[in-house]
Length: 335
Ligand SMILES: *[C@@H]1O[C@H](CO)[C@@H](O)[C@H](O)[C@H]1NC(C)=O
Image 1: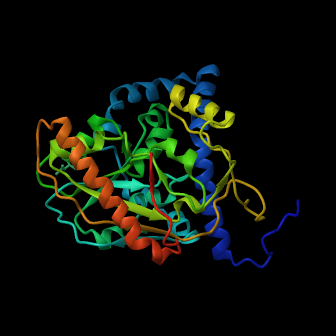
Image 2: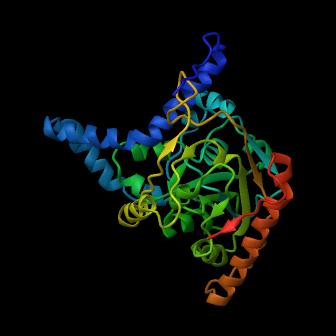
């Protein structure tokens, strides 16, 4: 194998961008484990004056991830996020104005591997979000599992991330007044097992909980397609039915964690590693689907709205794919 190294004269700005993405990938892959290691060490070496107060804090703070979280704008505006944004770079595109007197659910697709588009656009201060959607606060919802992890949960919440549980989404969408947006990566982590460059498989057919919540709270549904998300890394071929995929699906069923076997580039070379490629991400926010508040939706009402959502998502993809280098014959595959 021939290794292709990054040129030595790479400008400082690009090096900083690479560093910003590198630390973020490490956070994604390792920080939760490191945090668990730290708490275990504190207990083993009996630093009780650190871990006892923290565990007491944890006890009283346990539900915060389901109650809007705890964001700190200074964390969201760390300079590192500007470099992160510019590495790919990440762009946010609006197709229609939204009314800050309402609440919305953004259905984000596809999951890809690391979902930098969702993070960059909705968690940091360096995206065009505030400019394009004035008067709104975005809440990125992720699986509750991460909030059971000591210390790591504080970091997630500080940057505006909350749990994806029903209670948590309800907390964001249930009050009158509007101005909240629940951003949900609807395919879930499992979709990352289908994240191949040039492929567009979405797990949505059996995911209907978000439609029910939209009806209950009268929150409009907005399909969001992030072009480029699946192009950032490669992964070992794992078609459904292969032993690898069966193993991955079993791990997913038992733990809720998807483990795609990914490869892309490294920090100082372009031939192997877990670093995503420098490829642009264009996150297109579609037209809102108005939803009539229905406190007790019937299965038929849920199915009907779900179908409308899937059609709007398909339209969004077809209308915009040409601009982002996707050929006419490529279509979304719903699973
Ligand atoms: C917006 O979300 C926050 C945090 O969950 C919540 O406290 C507030 O009531 C919500 N506002 C509306 C209008 O739903």
